[in-house]
Image (cartoon, rainbow, N blue to C red; front, side, top):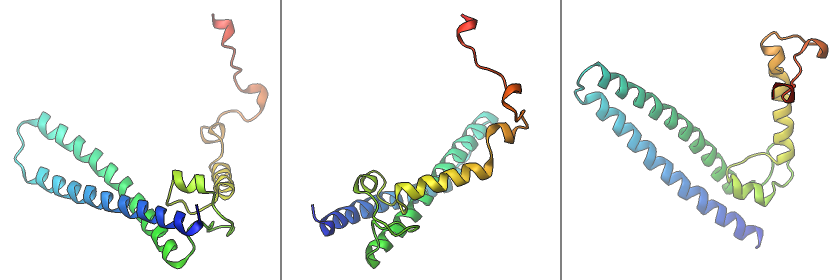
Length: 146
């Protein structure tokens, strides 16, 4: 498949997903508005409705972030940068683009960024103030418990 055909196919997928997300988010806004306006029964109903609204809000936040990434990818298509890594300018693999069409970095740069991010956060041992020397860390010995 030629690159231009591949980019056109991915542009269609991105556009379709953007439309789906917009419809979903519009429905969520209407549903949240309706739930606020509807009269609720007892305290349990209020609690359940509140929990459902919180979950819908979190999901809508995730979907909004995906929508922003899709918009950025469609912009890259328009300027001829789709499939180019934003970090190193090399080509992003077609399999990676098929899996996540709005991805902006090649796998190598994404891995580097993840390693840097993990280092800056430290290990779980560091975050929770656990012993740093190997000898004082607990040893896993699963067979001895059987």
